[in-house]
Length: 458
Image (tube, rainbow, N blue to C red; front, side, top):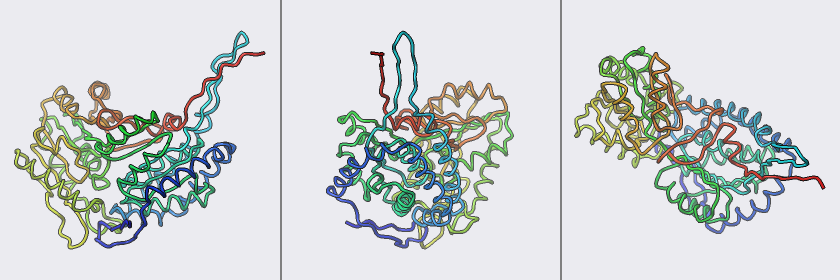
């Protein structure tokens, strides 16, 4: 079976890959199982040096990696570069914090007894990754996993296979053995075959439906599971803000990466006293975003990576919103192009929670804006979701924003900002946004299992 990679901005076929079979996946697993103890036995400093080489290779070839990503997922070239440049800071965090995070710790030494905690690698892990931020999402897993002594079976999304191949190329050139990092090429059936192996952990980013299947399969294995399953991230704008600045910030948070981010702003609640002003500034900002040629540095909104399936879904949300009383103030149509799949950045005002647009994850350049009377109503609506990834409040009063966000069920809280990820902070979700975490020192430690040592002198 072959997998074709199509540029969603042009409709052009740009690569073809042979898909892995159940047999080749089983063989890659067996090779990884054999190679992992040897990799883990190498001195920590050696593994760290290998991953430092990888970091330097990515920095040296940012242009090649950025153009590859742009052509296969339709991301504007400037945003592809941003992803790769931002990646370096994540690498630096992992490289600088890993040794201390997993160092053997003596927690008691008295009366002839020593108590110690040792961190051992999980073993062989499956990393089933995403297409929207292929480098960010993948490296959140495989970089700390490799540093801590694990072998990785890496399945990139079928929409980001070329980026996955580049990752492997740089890793191998940097000194990671091919059996320690193996690329699994395929679609959902390849992911299912991967989960069937006797792996020690599975780390997945994708849909709730697929995450539920993975969780069910993994439950029978009693292994480490991390699922990042998206969000319906709210932002609330209080009446005391700089309205123009808040509108510009949340518009960027909604439309950056063509809205194809799990932490994109997906619904906006605005205090009734500033609603009209906010909508005007928000709409003006969205209208200023350039769409079109994704290899043009000035382009801000790119193509829909998943093509017509994604376009049809988003158009369905927009039509549903209009039927239920919403008004489109900009966008709402397919972009006028004969090639590629684009949707005009779309803003719907007069939104309400009867609309799919305010309840189902959109994952595209569409947003609903709803008027609210005050903080209590906004907080209630922010919690009216099955998701719990991020939530934002814009207010001049930090204490007020903290009070609201403390009552919102979300893994990340933003005050006067949004759509932001830091390597120093844990990335985790609640409810249908998933379980487990990546990033921060906790996201390094998660690739290890603790061993408790009780040592008494003879």
